Amino acid sequence: MNEIKITVLTSSGAALPLITLLAQRQLLAGVLLLGQWDQEKQLIDAQLKQSGIPVQYCLPGDADAITAAQAAWQSPLGLVFCCGEKIPIAAANSPKYGMINLHGSALPEYRGPDPIYWQIRNGETQFMLTAHQLDESFDTGPIVAQQPVDIGPYDTPSHVFSNLLQQLPAILDMLLNQLEQHGQLDGQPQAGEAIRTAPRVTEQDLLINWRQLTAAQLCNQARAGNPLHGGARLVMGQGQAQLLQASPATQPAHGVAPGTIIHLSPEQGLIVALKEGSVRLDIIASADGAFDGYRFAQACQLSAGMQFQ
Image (cartoon, rainbow, N blue to C red; front, side):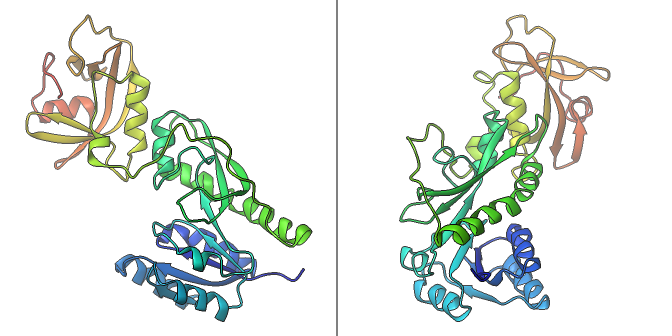
């Protein structure tokens, strides 16, 4: 079959690597920018136009405009990537091969807008970049292709997203091969029910629950939020700070209340008791800057025996 032209639908500059990949392979029809028109979209629009890439802004619910743009570009396939907007099913069904969403989890697990955050936080070591057909609900359509993505023990969401981007060529080849061999995309219904979901991260999600977390869980919570959400939240009195990195510690808690500072020194840093064991607070950011745990404690006049909320 002749090479098809693919439309990218997105609301974020994070989709630029996919756009660049398609343009380099002469597969790009154009880009539809969805969502509120803001400074980020203005910059994306200007950058794409400067590169000679067709780009059009559409309101997310405007099925006619989305359909008309793909028809004008003679694009039989849409790829939805890094798009926080719901695309009308009429628009999703209008291209010959429909629209495919690229989602960062092994669906049906971790359906939702923040799958990378929640997979890091839950200690996952690998997930699937999933290409699935759009349907009426978010992240529920038949699966067309999947490609594994690794999560290293110290990876932040930015690094995991970089790992995901490296799998885009393989996913693209899978889609094109299906069209070449079968003249259509072969979607398989998602199997089973999701055990874990990936809702949008809230400020409440970032608060540290000292009484429930293990050291590994707290370390994962901090790196899952680093840097986009400011890590996890340290609260003491009326003040807050951002815990960007933590490590398991070996000091025994001796039965003190979780959240209590049990050791503070330049050599070993700031160590806090958990329900079992302890954790070292490695990097903390506040309005005054970013510090190691010991220097943060000195700046805030913290001492052993004091307790985070």
